[in-house]
Image 1: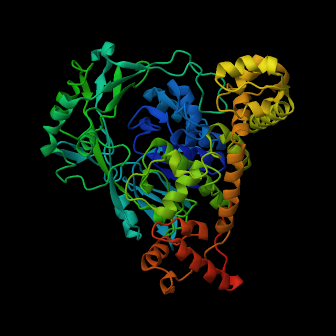
Image 2: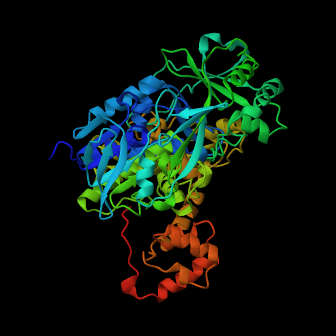
Image 3: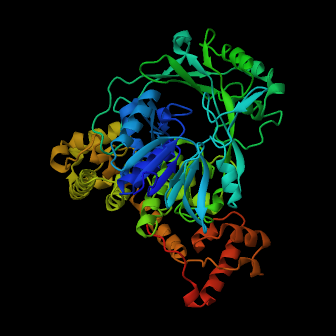
Length: 636
């Protein structure tokens, strides 16, 4: 092979690019990762944290499939917490505060250990094509790298513009130049682009914070790792701190509203709805006296602190004056101001479920280029794009995860079926089958697939099988075991639930919301007898308890999944002429013609397509000759 020829080229070294390059190379593709600065591979551009509600679920899924992010997070984490512990298991999510520098170092080390993966410091300016198929990329120095598959993971760099007050300049993030050329290249190929906006808060010197006036937020004593391969996490966790804005802070911020690029109209792109700037929050929620701020350390060996909740693009002097009115930050030294950044993206109705573009064969989009926000959403897309690029080379069907199989499936389906005109962020509320898609069972859901793809190692697969067998054996033992009133009642009364009058099955008692199966087993002295040990830091008892307690709900969820899969199995032909269907609303005809859904299930989730429209499609699909019903196959 020529030195400038590869199987897969990945453009961009952020979280999407890292996962895409790792997946493609580990599946046997000779892969080139092209990024403007090799020192910023895996860089955490905004907050130094991974996970959260919904996002943590995605990271667990990436790890279960054999991806990079979970392992890197465990290596670089300085604080670990399970969010929403007081709520049900479906909405609990892991989150880790990370050492920013250690994360990037660990991410690059992961890539450099993979045979067949090569790095290149350069800027891609053009996607090369021939007869509707990608043939590679051209860089700013005029060098052409050839490959039959290209994955673009450009982040916020395409024509990026940084805004601080009335000043603006080109940049992909603070201190780094923007990427130019790719947007024009893609538009020349017929793609439609748009503009989005995101922002970041100031960083301050931790030595100038009065921690006595703040509320500490420690990590969990028994912390849970992200990776199913991690047995032990660092014990010396670092605390975060909580502060609050006040009316004085809000008044100081309002002093700069007339110079705000957002309010003055200099920023045209839509920003993230669920992560607004501080000026947007006090403008939209004018009646609220205070907003919570999280002071997050950037690492173990630095005094830099990230002011989460204070994202802003106001003039620096306004930011500084307002920060110093926050209790505990009266003497704060600002290391760098917050800023907003506008960048190009390509509305995701232009991609398939495989993340391959509809217009150019062999060209894939992943990450913020598709309109998402967040490290986790980007990494998930990168992983799937890398998988499907490698499978395309082999002539194999793409891997497409269903909404009922993974949050990654929900994410990609939302993008393709619904599109987005603002930065998309994952929440558990977006997943209708979230009780099935818990963060604790991601390995049982996806590791077998990851192993079959060649990403999850034999050791990981055997670890999952051992744990799964232990859960099944423990559940069977608990379902067959009983406990007497004399043994159980002291614990039941202490837990605030009714005592029993005769021997009761442990499995039945475990369904009571007040009961902890762990405590019940300890009270009965039956743990060693009934619990089968399994690898990993988390007891299998918790998994058994969830399965028992939510058994009825889980059965109902599975029934809903079966019904939806019936619609997913009805493929819509690529040549279906929606414009000619008079019994469908005009809006539905326009959306269907533009998005061209792959199946009836996807069509039903498109905004503007009503249940009545779906019924019409179903009737027409059944009348269509069988030989014309086929469409591109999708593997799951």
